[in-house]
Image (cartoon, rainbow, N blue to C red; front, side):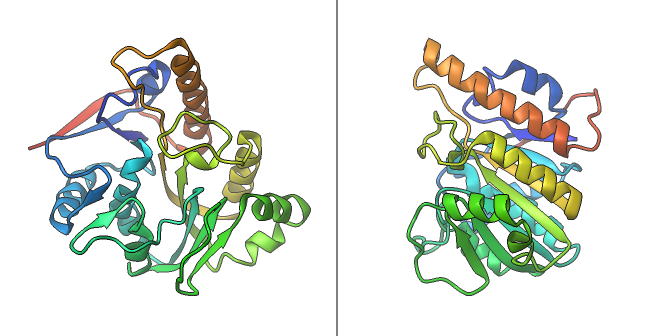
Length: 252
């Protein structure tokens, strides 16, 4: 089953994806974009409990911290390693009383069951961080995997893995947080290897393009179509079952 967060009409111009995704979450409370209070995140966690699948799309990259609720459920089932494909290292300090899309890894590390966090494709200079958070640049990630995947495997301490993808790590463009240096074809080769070797217990995806105006330009439509093709491939690779019946969940 595939689910998605329906905010800001992010997936309006991805009709094939919307047809394939069988679970639509529609929050009717604010405070989810960029940064959230613990109270708001608890409301989000309660809402997302209704999603029984393993692949969830969060929309634009400013919602990446909402991964926490999806991750927490899987981490509560047993030890796992969190793999984050992201051009940013989301372990920076946050304003007091908030968790942000740039700080959520600090909270993820405190979840029971999370043994290690590996950030792949990171282009930022890492801040001071615990040894349990490891980052690889786009060049290092691609070189290690292409020349000897065992180098990547040696970093992963558990058979259970959770994967969080921010598509700003890819050579796609169109997102709010820049364009990465990782070819889409390389990422899918890595994902297929991961699926063969490990138990993927869950995955979330963000980094969607959002048109600047209600009616996207021709260029924006082309970029969105490219993102949709990536999303469809992810659905076919990761999702185990895709029920045809649509479900829509509202929250007040």
